[in-house]
Length: 179
Image (cartoon, rainbow, N blue to C red):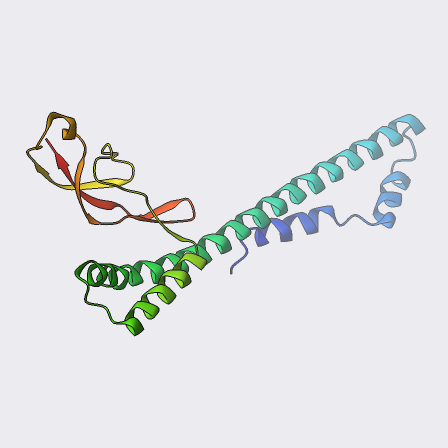
């Protein structure tokens, strides 16, 4: 990864490399100055060096935080892509379970897959028929006339379950809403 602060590091390193000899030369080159003026000049130089150090230190801390955040995002993105590509397989297994078309061996594979994706942080979003429609977690793919007034604005059918990974929703639940 290219270091965006390299230019700053190089610049401040050259500016802040003050040796004892340079400080003594500064003091020796101005013998006509009274002692308190030389002390004030040295204190000013010290304060400038301190400020440059603090600026450099804060930039480095920001760089470390930014790098750590990028690494976490990269890891989560890679996991999210893989888990998102496995969702259609989970959907196929769920449809097979609903239709009773699963053998004992296939059921075991289904449970293994479910446990594996759960261990990686994938969580199914709880959605039930009769729940209120929430645009934050549901995607309405159709509206149909509600059988009763109680089902207006509520979920009538669930076409695909929604899933979240950590705090992010990676797929909204696809639902049919009563109107």
